[in-house]
Length: 211
Ligand SMILES: [Zn+2]
Image 1 (tube, rainbow, N blue to C red):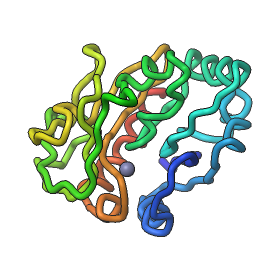
Image 2: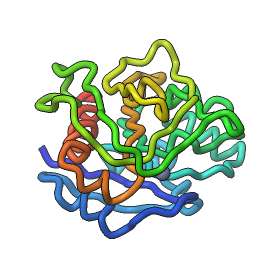
Image 3: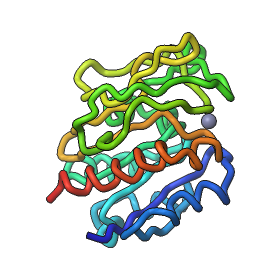
Image 4: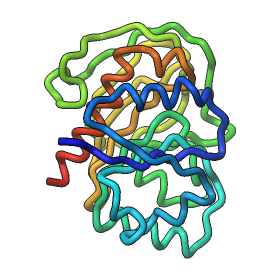
């Protein structure tokens, strides 16, 4: 089945060429790109009707009460979503958002470190998101000292002093199936075949969840 996605960025710079090249490499996949704040026009039931899934790679903060209500309604009714990397740190002033994504990187407490070589541990190899993957090495940015909700379904772990112990999960928020993957700072991650497989399989799995 071919999937049509909306990939949303904004609020944080990134290496654009290798990022989009990753999505171009996925088979049976097409996408449109949107950037905050313009991307808010898609975040409602009506706005997303042309897309099978939303992929967030933003770190946007400002959101009006009206925009919160439209996004909340979308999440309540259900839309497959994949949140990547700094999307964990979006909407810091909208407390419900941390319940949506299932983790919270608190300013002043959370840490980050670039260019860390570490092992990504596959916590559940039989899950469709991690299928075909075994523990792998990556050179990427880690986040530390962020909280993860106890009710998430853990898929990826790390055992490194600069990283939180849980770095990838799935959960249902209201009627929305979602995956969060902490990895993915730059081209070193986007070009890692294991990372690509994780993102690709996350997109396919959240879409399958809604069938
Ligand atoms: Zn980063």
